[in-house]
Image 1 (cartoon, one colour):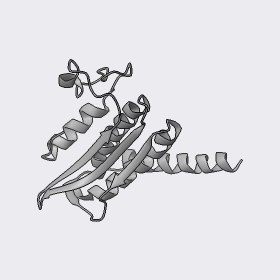
Image 2 (cartoon, one colour; image 1 turned 30 degrees about the vertical axis):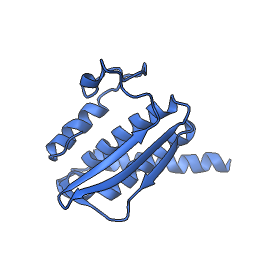
Image 3 (cartoon, helix red, strand yellow; image 1 turned 180 degrees about the horizontal axis):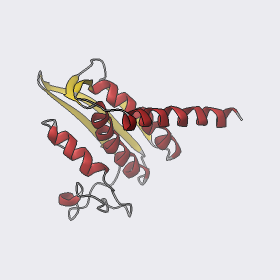
Length: 159
């Protein structure tokens, strides 16, 4: 029973967090990239655990800030992490790693790698189109990667 209660509490927390972002206006403010990254990891933990994918995180020593909508930032990072977990789940190694790299005072990279097979050459130009079938998977990408690209581009970034 303890496991069910823990899972229920976790689901309640996740739904509450998502409800907050859906319910309230999310103005452009100073948003913490590190906080959004940690929230996205929290949302991905259950999926990585059930799919037996190891998540390793590095270089979260400093907090980085950007003018953005917190929900956009969270959704973008979550989308990329989720797709990496899905890809890694189909591999033998089952690993996803993520790190923040400061390129310069005004440039930060979020690097996410996975042990998946990669994206087939014929799909590379289409992975950010809504509802495309991804790489070697039969699963459709939905809107998540296209929305992530739109948000990251709007923030002056590239994916």
